[in-house]
Image (cartoon, rainbow, N blue to C red; front, side):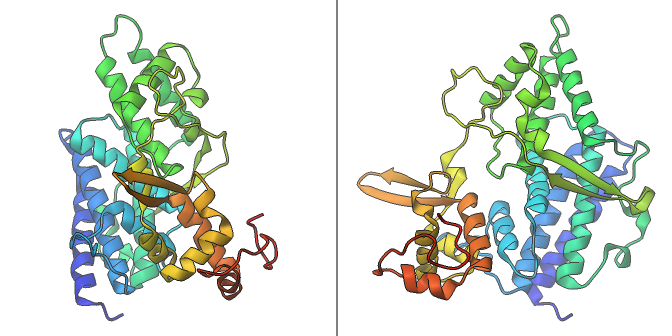
Length: 365
């Protein structure tokens, strides 16, 4: 495969950071090990996604700022790309790695060896799949198996692992232990793991406070961390050939509020600007439609009237609509399954509204 020059440089940077992360994981030195693993693994994926986007002809520079796009936008573009085909579950793995990296880089958390291994090994699996999908290469052809992360403590069932972690936090919070900072560091890691199933996950001290209060109050894990009940792993193979995929199950809904007085550990705060981060033009680009056709599809699906999809920010006299990843998911699925020509004729700017079910395959009713 003939690589574009920028894609070649970015892919080389990705492989360099990936090898550094693998070497750090296998290092006998504990000091700084987790930090080095998470920082370099996240960087490896950002470089790999940008290399893949460049190779498939996507724009990776923000026209407004002139700077390269961030990790979250890389994920969004990769999910909508027909070649990269990043799945929701894969995006969740990358977001969880990024969330743990963010805490490790800007504050501190505690990532148990089992949780670290599962995420690193899932990262190896996904890195290999993306290399093969976009560049027709495999990790095994680039360097020997001995550099890949290995562990003397093989992965256990994720639910049991999370229960053990939760019990450790509970023990650390027992009166007289004086280990509250260790407990809160472990809480931050479990909160970061919610990124597997919730794209808008942001770990805040307020969330840590609520979780700590719930644990001290004797609440079970599925009440304090309901999102983690949606999470499972599929582990195949053994030794150096093991592969790990995180998968999403359907679980109980979680309500979001911004009221710190709400006495519920399972409630998360959200940053509206992080949740609704796409402009209409950026949403259209991510879906792969022109602005006009994206407008027609939004009208057809009722996106602009859906509070989970759109929020308007008021700055003085100006109102700026912004859209969430939920809007992107709905529009991307509809664009694949529905007749866009019929939607354009029915909902183009200046046209009249059509009954929701008049177009074959419509799910907007």
